[in-house]
Image 1 (spheres, helix red, strand yellow):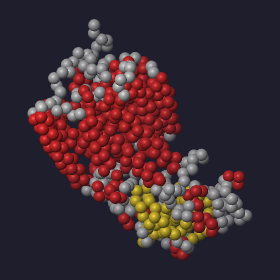
Image 2 (cartoon, chains in turn brown, yellow):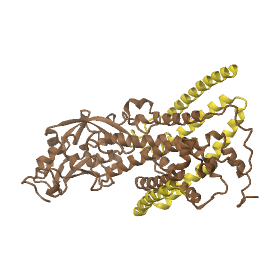
Image 3 (cartoon, chains in turn orange, blue):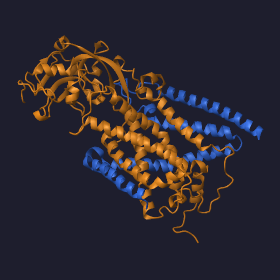
Image 4 (cartoon, chains in turn brown, yellow):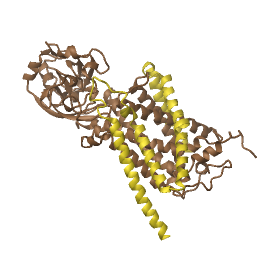
Length: 424
Length: 143
């Protein structure tokens, strides 16, 4: 008796071809790759969500200023994991491709739901990796805003992944720990690719690559992708980073930049005479300081990384005035947040907010020198913010103003509510 | 329908709903229609173009594998590895995002980088092929 609906001609042969060699297309291979892929996507998702929380923190979230290089690690892991996931995803899709041309397309409502969820999983996974790779190379061949679209699609893709994990849990258990009672899913997942009458004998290559060899080759390819890109954040590997979009030692003063002064449109404003740094807002004594006056204040030097959301980072020695010292001189209340504003007139990152923790950290500086030399204009001349454990886009350049924000109510502030606090 | 299937469906749907709400909440920035076009397009290009091409290439390699099985397998793996590395780093080596005002962005000679990586992969493949052949020949003699 023939199955209904009738199978399109040639589909059985295509499925059979796509399922060779069988041991690389069986549930065990798919399960191993699937687990690796699930872990990789989970790490990327968690570190991506963390980066978002740090950049736009809700009231319940506080990102500490220490350890100084934590963001560098989390974002480096995000990008490195994403790149290393490409071979895993392609290998996984290749190993299960014969299911794509399975017939009939849907065997039950549950099977239909499972298969439909594959579209956001496969399309989302491919797009997340492709768009992430494009983003780190500053290439945006689309009309949408990358961070928001990438984040929204990440939630959808992880949702589809969770559905897939739920649907494949028994098959995966059975594939990795055989000997348990066969389940209906196992019987289906391991069904012969030629269940509709194809011939599966006789075409095995003389030397079949073992499953272990195949998985080893996939792991080695992931390792190779990491090896040729990881040096953009792990400095000792920089000479091997021949396919990385950045080198931590290449840029003005030997440090990369993300946005140049020209791109930010600040060249004239930054080079004009009469520069003044304002400290205003919720302070007792608003300040107006020239660059010379800033340089005359007690200087502090800190070795800190610039850690970009694009996954590169570079460490340098910065010299400047501690923000905490400026706030103290201006009579700001301890525990207040501070908005740091740039000479840049437009752009999403023309200002950033220092949480109380970051504002109070002695190494959060308004820096005027990098490795002992005056800042290059692309690094934020005359003065830039540099602080520990912050995303690069929140290390505001060409700083013109510190605005001390309305402090939290006295009940939530630490000790030190002085009598000389001026409410704006 | 197993318990894990239902649990995955419920939790997965919740995650997907968050993503969809995010996309709809920032409609102008996300442009859901264009995002959907790119996402579905990525799946279709992969399933209808990339994999069929890979299958044709591997079928060709499998034919040559009958005469030189180990060499064909080693060169097939090397070819696949290099193709995947090139795909993963395409936006970098193609340098579409290079900007004249920022020499620290995409600063390297990526053609040279790709050639160097390809050379290393080829050398590893040749070495692996030789070791594999030697082990295989020994195994054949011992049989």
